[in-house]
Amino acid sequence: MSPSRLQDALAGNPQVWGGWVVGPTIIGPEEFTAAGYHYVGFDVQHGYLDDADVALLLRRLEHVPIATAVRLPSADPAPIGRVLDAGADAVIIAMVESAEQAAAAVAATRYAPAGVRSFGPLRAGLGQDTAELEARVSVFAMIETARGLAAAEEICAVPGLTGVYVGPADLAISMGYQHSDAWTHPEVRAAMVAIQTAAHAAGLVTGIHAGAGKLGKAMAGLGFRMITLASESVALRRGATEHLNEARGSETIGNASGPSATGQAPTGTERGGYN
Image (tube, helix red, strand yellow):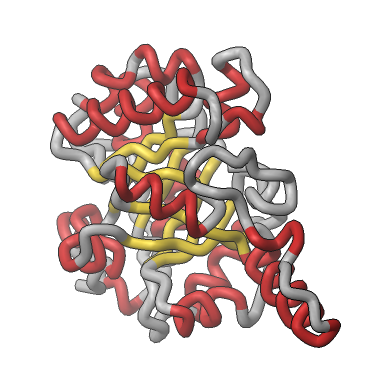
């Protein structure tokens, strides 16, 4: 059986750190690997990636030591099956607001009679044993709305779910605040803690889209374990800005410095634009 690098990383580390890719790229995932990241997420919900892009990216990483997750906009079984057939270690299903939606996401990763996944052995290296193919897959329900927050305990009780993944910006918006309040408003912070607490009590992995290193450290302090730090574009912009400022003799990095973990609201350039 092809091992799950994400499961291995979670088993061996208190936190796993991730990068994020929103468009076709040749070098991005390997650069995240070289930097020491544990996983890379491919964004099919908001990003500019289609099935062929994701399949090619996953194939390129077959022999690269980094785990892979794909964020999808819904629990539709067809796209979930395609990215798993292509070798993704995990799927992150956006906008889950009920136990029924979470159960549908799990079912899309399981073959009959436990689920509705269709058998498509496209990658020889993955093998053809259906039990082993199911076992290597991790399923995350993304809780990022007030409705999802209200149903957090029921969502976390769904059998087969690996974990939950919090989207702070959408959570803040759905609670009636601005996306920039995600890291500063006490009620939004309390909501994140409530989701983490419910997931931890259920024995699930808790993930979150932090978007910056200092915020990632703060979220680790709250008990989150799977933490996305930066998208490829944000990492490039920060590095490019740092080099330019060094060349000019500037001692500051400007907008690329990132938000503080203690309250400074992230700007659009600091937080990666969305979660």
